[in-house]
Image (tube, rainbow, N blue to C red; front, side, top):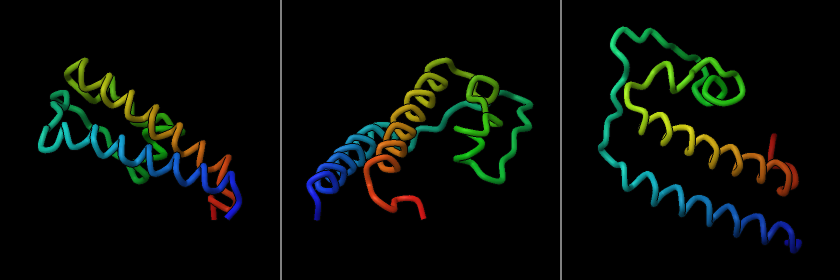
Length: 92
């Protein structure tokens, strides 16, 4: 294993632990969806991030939930980008 792969894997484990902690704090919590919302998705992750078809501000009722989702997206896209940049053959 090369040095940068070891660092990348350590960073990935750290991010996963952090995300696990953050999601455990919200376990069982349901976000309030705006009444009459008709959003749909065939590829949730793409539509939420790169596609821009799922806009938390248009879907969620509470501003705190919108901010929580935006923050989670930011953390997860940073993680995804780091893996793609630093782990050889990460994207298959």
